[in-house]
Image (tube, helix red, strand yellow):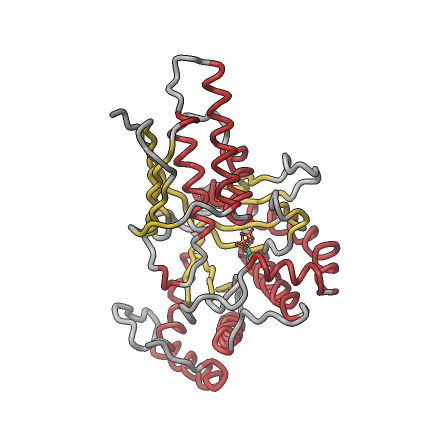
Length: 361
Ligand code: DP6
């Protein structure tokens, strides 16, 4: 029997300017443009293999070895679009095998534990689209394919690229201008690092899709956010990335996370994604920046309590001095600080410890 297959990976992306709100639910068109920093592929990625054969009886999907349903409307939408593009190629060149009529077997695997509490749907949909596009030998660019990934999950469109990515909301009703574009590759600003603080690995309270719909419908603050706050911030954040201006990038990132969570609280009934520990992490980051009198770290939180911290490689020791002090059971870190610096740092820690003390097991 003839079998054809293709494999590819897609990275997890974390938004530094959040997508929150849809203007069209079926096409997944957002109410604002967003920006993400896509983490290194070695650490957090989905690996997907798409296989097709005239002998397969039905479309099937395995996630981390377990069979899952492909029935969701969103997934079906993506498969239809990809098959349509393949059909167009087959119509132009009759020597091509008729993949568009054959069933698909898709196997996907994450290299990070599901318990890390990271949204895996973005990398998952992006890898699915990329693997099938590769199998079908589609000529479409990443930006074009991002429009298909967008229909699977909004944030997935940004995982078509590595590095610094913008999802331009677009203006058109058919969504043909709502796509991801690269602001800069990972190499543009390779000093940028991210640390993930897992506050809770529990499933999130309110799924993003229904959460954002409630916010659009009920929050007054949300209107202010999409009309007056985000458009300006989008341009400022792009500029800070292009100019590698970490203090500005960090401030915008923290403010945008806070603004997004404020609209969640302003929804009715309110949505709470941050918990008490998340709030301590926020306080800690501000205390660290104040202690050094320099912007060392930025935090951002998605639709859950876990923190993603951004920092520059050269500041790693400064940040980790605090983190390791808090998470005492982490081994393998040796302080490069002088005794005097450590005693200053301990004094600062004593000052804030009631606010930030918490434990990881
Ligand atoms: C808070 O992309 O998961 O992570 O389009 O409904 O699938 P759907 O939502 P999703 O929402 C992500 C929300 C966010 C912010 C972001 O990633 O920009």
